Image (cartoon, rainbow, N blue to C red; front, side):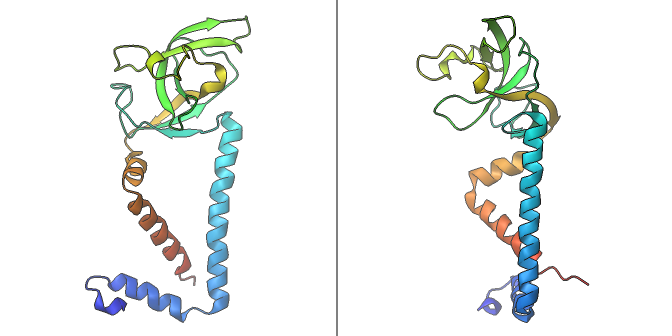
Length: 189
C-alpha cells in the first residue's frame, strides 16, 4: 500500500520500523510518549502556579496593539499581587467569548483603597476608541476577574506556528501525528 505512493519513502521506513518492533518495545515507546505529554502538562501547571495566571503564555492574534506587539508575537504573563494601573498591558477574557484580548489599560477607577475592587477600561494602541464595544452587552468596565495577567515578556513572531495550526486544523493533526510517530519509532541504542 505505502510502496505505491511516490515520494513517501519515509512513511514506508516508519511502517517497516513499527512492524519490526516487539510488543514490549512498542509498549515502552508508548510509555515514553505518555511521559513526555505528562511532563509538558506538569510544566504548564507549574507555570500557572508560579505566575498566578490561568494562561501564562498567549499569542497575539490581531494588529490592535501595533506597533508595540504584532500578530504572531508570544507574550508571557504574570498576574502578580499589585493593583492594575493605567498604562499596563493586560490580557483579559470577556464573558461569553473564549479568545483572550491583549490591550492597554487606559482608566482605572478603584472602589476601595486596596486595588482589588476596581473598574478597568482598556484600549488597543492601534484602535480609535476604547473597548466598551468589545465588552459583553451592558458591561462598561472590566473587573479583576476578567484579567488573565499582565504582559511581562515578549517573543516576537514565534506564535505564527500556533496561528497557522488554528487556521489550518489538518496541519495541527499532521504535526502531532508525525511527532507521535517519531517518538514511537525512536531507535534507542
